[in-house]
Image (tube, rainbow, N blue to C red; front, side, top):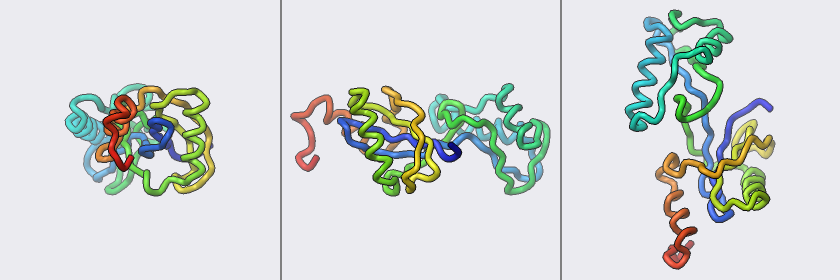
Length: 173
């Protein structure tokens, strides 16, 4: 299925946050090589994530660029968006975009049903979707370590603490 990579974080069988994960890309400036743009973007991602995210320049990067008709030493036109890798992995330079307020209820139901089926109360359910506000999806995987810190300011850590220590949960939870 073509579309976007959607992660729904389920804590205590409730969806707490939903985010689209996008593969790394660079924007051409009409002057810099793609290698320079990738290196610049990679330094920015590493700085923003304490070194946990960077874009490797490797065979996969070269293959992705070649499919778009580019090499590392080519210059993209100003404003041209170039996909650098296909996977939306955050550790390899991908980005995360909160869509919690727009996700379709069918996707929420599917995520909760999947978490219940595997009986894991804290899980990241990954779906391929046409768009977060549409009901069509294909299941990718369930991840029992969904990276709760990636979703600030959403209350993922708070809901996790509430699960671990139910007597300390908020009164309105």
